[in-house]
Length: 518
Image 1 (cartoon, rainbow, N blue to C red):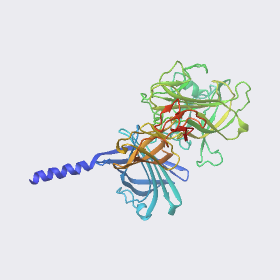
Image 2: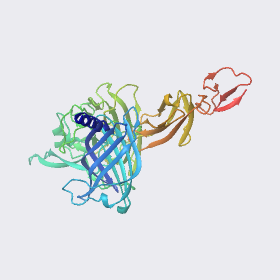
Image 3: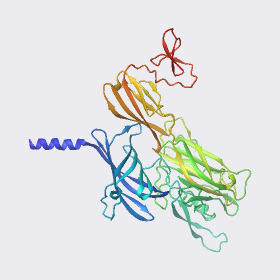
């Protein structure tokens, strides 16, 4: 009997946690514009009732090189909203951060701060966890912004962090042997100093470096650095454009216009740069556009080739190169601006929409390439292109919902409709653009009423529009649910939401979204 009771107890305990899982990823922490990275583990524990427990333990801040222990961020009984992408956890609450157990930290600040406001947004998937946390620490006059497992923005998008690549530069006089030159390349970005190809050594030996860390930043920037791209002369006469990419540069030809000179990526590649980072950028999102701040000036103005350029290609992660050497079928979307003018050498923000292909290719990687000239080998020596704060933009366009096929107008935070059986009513929440998705959670349900929460999320979870949908038991008239395509829609509907061609005397119809009596 005791054995049976023990077995039942163990079974009950195991059923309380359906699936606990640890995710280890890069944690990016931004405080007052200063960004640091660390490796961290977040645990999500799905309970038998479908709710989640969330834990980020031993959270630390790196302040001017000194590590400050914050503590454990733990939230329990989070109600998930289900979507085609995974479960979404979203809460805006106050918590007490508990003491961590990392013995290398002498003092944990969290317990001393009392109740603090915290906003959490998380997308839970089988193989990946993406989290956004905002902590308002009023006593320290700081807002801590945390992202975990971010595959929706490009890493080091502010060009704040750099590594050193070494190249051999030739002495054109032939008197001295080649000398070792240190070249600054931004982390997670690559230029010719880390290139591949048969002519990579020649491209570096007979040309000045193309990438530099710069303290020239735009007004209003939160960071302290930007990237300076420069062109230079090869062997004193051939212009080599300054180019940077999230993939890898290939120097495969002496001819600048040859497509063997390109930027490329492949998730199958195993090579890494001097910092240990791969030559590709993972991407789970489907952005609506890409934005970047630039400041551009040609050393010698060129009437025929006056423009700098930026291009982006969202792919499935198999091999792809820019410029293309053939037609590629692995591309989800592209964005390009090949007409970036000098604009009097002033900072300007360039926004480029993505054009999506009509295919079923799944986004996995993003190749971004930026160059001092839109035409290979053109421009002049000492063209300067400053680049800063590149970002992917995700909108939430036209959130919509239907109940049993009837459209419900989302004109207030809480909307109401009717259904013959609320419990079995089919709810379909959608958005109109690539860069967003809808998630639905059940708040309550009875025979007479069902209440749902609708979350319309940008892919990067930075924007979430929230509505409460109340479905009351009643006739499915569809009167309040009809949405016309335009304000001058001439179509006529009956009270069941069906289009009719002929109106009969004495009956009520819907015309231009309003009830009319024939």
